[in-house]
Amino acid sequence: MSASTTRTFSDDDRRAYLALSGASGDDREGAKHRVPEALIGGMFSYILGTELPGFGTNYLKQRMEYRQPAFYGEALTATVTITRLREDKNLVNLETVCRNAAGDMLVTGEALVLAKDVAPR
Image (tube, rainbow, N blue to C red; front, top):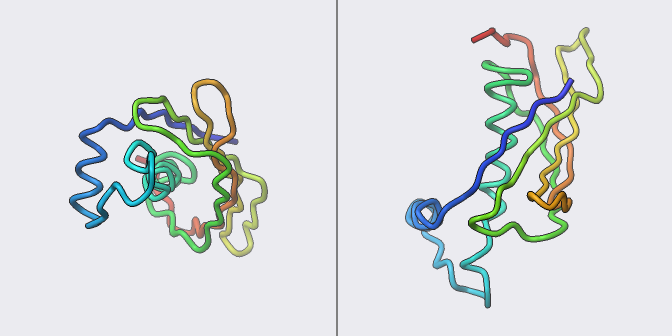
């Protein structure tokens, strides 16, 4: 099983992130045009908490490898895929991937979640 979400982060999202995080947004050349890694990670969190496994999921571990930068204004698709179910422990291992509209792999990783009290919404 897998689930995906697509989002295009805007300049308004950039300003909101900078205001919340306190980051300057211009520490490096071109950095202000790159989507922060935390926002991409949030796409995975959104899927895990709303779709797969769903509401009540508890994050235990997340590993992400950022291969290429993501940029504001481009469509990003995050996908999580179940790779292992451990029903005796209520654990779910998932592959996490984010691609841009051109299909370029931006992020790869994996997550481990506790899905003991997952409730349908």
